[in-house]
Length: 233
Image (tube, rainbow, N blue to C red):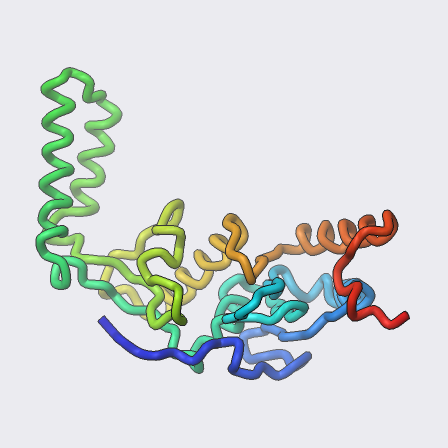
């Protein structure tokens, strides 16, 4: 496993309002008017975005900082400062680094099946699923998985994608690195969309539309709204 001390992405400057090679754009939008104007002019150009939220110790983006892009992977690469921060992908060879747990996994899987059969509660559907999984993941072929590594302090590679829940696991060590990276970056974006990540909120076109309308409604009601403290009165 690789051990590095990555630079915090938030300290790696991004050029503002300059289209990057992969089509991503970094911009600071400090008021609701700025956000509304930018989105009105660029809604047709970008399908995805990440918004920096208020945080005492930001790691990826400050509040009011946005990254827009035409693909999920491009947005995540920019947020993580891929290629500059030290964050990258690695194949975690589970069988090599933790052979006991690797062996136990398959032993426990087989023991559970045997136990359910003996109790008479093992269904044909479960047996079919077991056989498919046994072909896909055997002790000889399932050696580990690809993951994002060298994450900043406080983030674990094993927990980066919510423990892998709901995500396709990449277990082929020969899978091309670029393909691995894009897939894991896309999974990261989807995870940010589905979970409460804290300092990052991931958006698609519809959620940005909804966000702007929400803050306009809050402003109309006299409530706090996006960038109110930055509004010049």
